[in-house]
Image 1: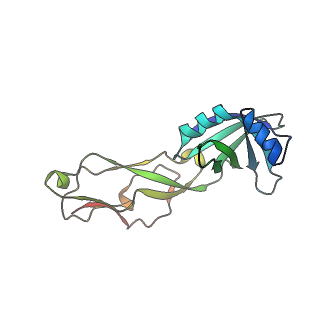
Image 2: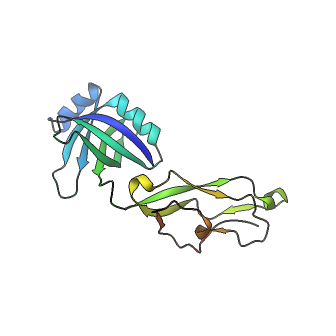
Image 3: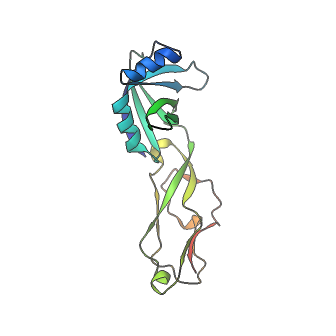
Length: 185
């Protein structure tokens, strides 16, 4: 799984007006939630945060928050929600969820189809039924994507099922393994 480090600082101002002033000065507010603990208000350099979020867009990533002024220093988090301005697409606020890196979590991981199916070369049509799978495992064990080699698929065959996909050790699939992922008609 992708790992990214984002520098941040604890935020001491609250409310609509102070948040607007923060944004005007190139800072983006955010919050880190921890199960059962008080939420930790944070602030980020807007440009640095935007670059990092753009880099991880659409992918599962474990983020290491380097929090200035925090007793723990760094925390492992996932992005929970990103609020953007609907017109300018600027990041207005980010919510993070602190995680335990050693506890299994559920993730949705894309399936990447590798090659050209033999049946497609013979005039068949590739039918894709599933482009992602639900996996459970420790965050660092989860792959960025699952590769599916489709070069051997012929027309009229049963196709490739989710159970045919190769998963890393310590990772389990939550979807039905009998479900057809792709076939050639």
